[in-house]
Image 1 (cartoon, rainbow, N blue to C red):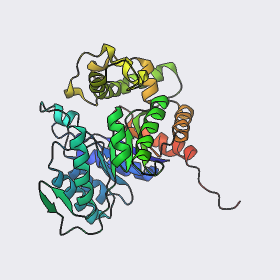
Image 2 (cartoon, rainbow, N blue to C red):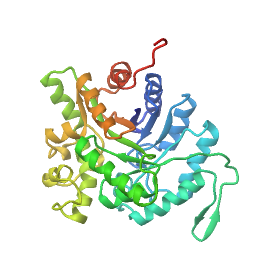
Image 3 (cartoon, rainbow, N blue to C red):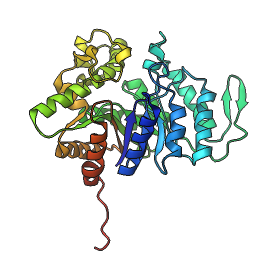
Image 4 (spheres, rainbow, N blue to C red):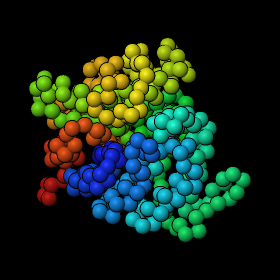
Amino acid sequence: MDFGVVLQNDPPAWRVVELAKQAENYGFTHAWTFDSHLLWQEPFVVYSQILSNTHRIKVGPMVTNPATRDWTVTASLFATLNDMFGNRTICGIGRGDSAVRVINGSPVTLATLRESIKVIRALGNSQAAEYKGNTLRFPWSSGSELPIWVAAYGPKALALTGEVADGFILQLADPSITEWSIAAVRAAAEAAGRDPETSDICVAAPAYVTDGTDAGLAHGRDQCRWFGGMVGNHVADIVARYGSEGAAVPAALSEYIAGRQGYDYNSHGKAGNVHTDFVPDEVIDRFCLIGPVEAQVARLEELRALGVTQFALYLQHDAKDETLRAYGEKVMPQINTRATAKE
């Protein structure tokens, strides 16, 4: 299993770069960041510094969207970084959340997302793209490789992911929802004539390694409660479209937002967000990885058995360095054991 780290582009930017460097030294393969231009600093500027200060780690947004940049600009950013640093980028993309909602916009339609993926993928892979009635290409780009991973929750978004994406991003770590979501993506891939086993499956969620005490667990939950609120934004859209009854989405995903009463994007992705008080401990325990090392390993093994190929841990809490160290020194070595020199 690969491991990624999800960072916020809060200043100072060099702190983000330093965390990515630490992650690579501990064996993480991916450094993801939020992409919300009013709330945080511009990620592609930070990516250039992460790539120039590391050797192997790949970078990308979790997630960008088709609304806040022209699609050709997005593709150009990736292709330029690939030319400079040797194909170490990945495009996580979705319909849009904070980046569009903060400016009173709305997430794009799935049809728009599908079309944007075609354009960004072609240009990001040094190919020609049909865009606004023109056939376009980057004449300076050669050999660029850009995987496109789609973030999704609802049934139609999951179907699109299976039909067109190179990877699937699920932003929660509940095993039952993970199983349901992966099944939907793979069924759509198979129906589209694609090999359902070839797409990467990334589960992204906060991880907080505790000392095994009740007090430590309670603190870890409070540090990660914001995540339930973030997920709730997407779930609210799904419930508004499909209703809370029926099989469109699992009850384990939809029921908990009944107490949701709005959301403050000024506190988006931050520990202590008071607009996430509606999220119960039970949801945090299901959506996140909170507990001692052995509990982290057990959940990761469960997710891997379901087909997850990468776990990307959010570091939006008060134990960033400690969590990276615990994963690098204690958790990841138990998941990915090294071969012995002699059998």
